[in-house]
Image (cartoon, rainbow, N blue to C red; front, side, top):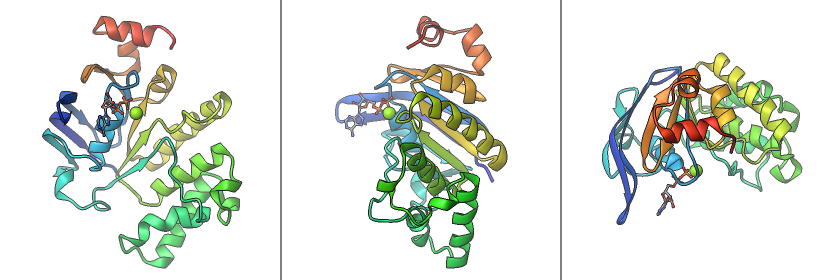
Length: 239
Ligand code: ADP
Ligand code: MG
């Protein structure tokens, strides 16, 4: 299950401040796309608009041909994983994972099946009865991904999901995300300011800078044929 995503001439303003200026991008079903750019360039804002969590000022965003702002939350076919994980501290892992499904009327046995599948996939089945406070950072991060998996979305939206992990765990989780993409075949959009993450995960990288898209290409294209001086300096030199 995967969705195409069509972003057409999208501009975003906060009062007088334009944070994204005339962005257009087509993402194919099943593609793994990374939005790469420095802090403040508008990556999270664009991701939140794709999720329908934020209005566009101009232009349109469609998931599988249907405009996100035409559909209620929960029926947009996308699931977002936040940098902060945003887990509910008073709920167990299982409750955290199943919470979002109760609103969209998934039967109880089906919820249990999906939670089991996600927990096994992420190797957190032994943690289902724990509260978030009793988990490591890496385990919390898995729960946050599990909460997206149980929604069976056509597209996953990740906002810097690895940035709170230490270097070793970040590398391992990166590999696991790549495997998850192979297994689920969903469309994935992954936001990061980390060039290595972008290079290793992406089918295509979207380099963003100063409210605009600087270049879209495969990691090899971006690395060997940077279209602008900014891309060359940002991707070429370590952070
Ligand atoms: P990134 O994720 O690339 O770091 P963001 O999308 O978070 O960038 O932010 C892009 C710009 O929009 C920044 O200048 C930020 O200060 C501004 N911004 C983000 N959210 C808001 C908001 N709710 N109100 C006003 N400005 C915002
Ligand atoms: Mg951000």
